[in-house]
Image 1 (tube, one colour):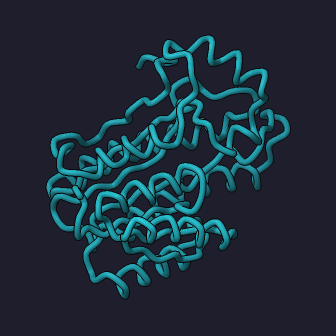
Image 2 (cartoon, rainbow, N blue to C red):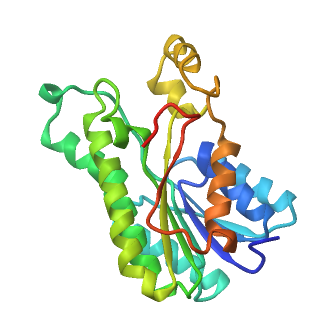
Length: 250
């Protein structure tokens, strides 16, 4: 129970990586605030999994690219669990689709940057006044930020690169307050993300390239997030940790 008595907010916490993280943090005693965008059924199922552990949690709908929705999320968390928030996990983001540079327009650019970078910025800005010394912010970047991304993913890779830089900036700015800021850069993790935007043939091909010869799973990621949320990582900040089975060495 390494997070007993702590409050954790997980954006995009209802499914896939977010669900695994919500449940894992709850298993360590955290009171979890699970944000979801449009699928209430997924959110309710995740909350049920949390409650089956004997842990506490609430679900809050909201679009994390909109400042008013972000404020609502944090207001709900504070109303339920008090005015201290100890962990923020910015999971919201995604590739959304693939477009070459000549297919991209300004609307597409703004959307990719908003969902991946602006959401992270808005939530970080909102949480800081509630965070006591010893708190932790965990962002989600991507292997794409390291290698430029696959075909049609240039803006996704660019936005995730911005998340990496923002993580380092916030580590410097918030470190004197005792707030740690780190990011994960996942490779291929077996989620609906890759079910939608990758092919089975490519995923099998990539398994043969990984030194560990497998895709990651959501529990691999949730375990690393939990480590970064806990006191065991108390001297780690400003990092962008690769979790990709060894496919990329930074």
